[in-house]
Length: 196
Ligand code: ITT
Image (cartoon, rainbow, N blue to C red; front, side, top):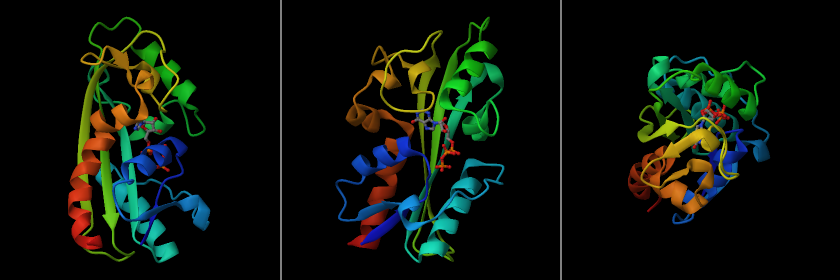
């Protein structure tokens, strides 16, 4: 059984490949099937996840899973939130986004933040009852980058219980603790019924 992974983010592809290892399904990144990014016009994580999953499922005729995620920073009133990938502009790189985040928090003592991951799984492009799940991961924003693993904001996301940034964790450990790992464990439970 094939499922199209409705993301253009290679960091997410690596994490999902590992997260799906326990399931008897083949995950195919949308790029390999010629699916390009769809505009994320929603105003919530859930809406955007559904938009991306529906787009990939309709174009490929396969079941699709999409991930809409982002970083919610307390001192910034929840920003960058759903705009995390384009915080520093439409063409922003991870490094641009991190620099902007650190500059916005320069004189800020409250450095609490959390990642949110919302997943949408659609059995087909017109599935009226998509499976939705969400996971959160709490941490604090550092003053400097540390670590070479992960992607996105991982080098500045510090997890006090691990005494490390997310970019310093092994992928397997990150997947056990992260917003994405938590959202996936709920989804996998429910998908087992679909693929049993
Ligand atoms: P797709 O929409 O194609 O999946 P994207 O990168 O545009 O790729 P999002 O719109 O969901 O994805 O934006 C999520 C952003 O939030 C992502 O680009 C990172 O900057 C950040 N992010 C999400 N999960 C993260 C994680 O596990 N570690 C670090 N940063 C993360």
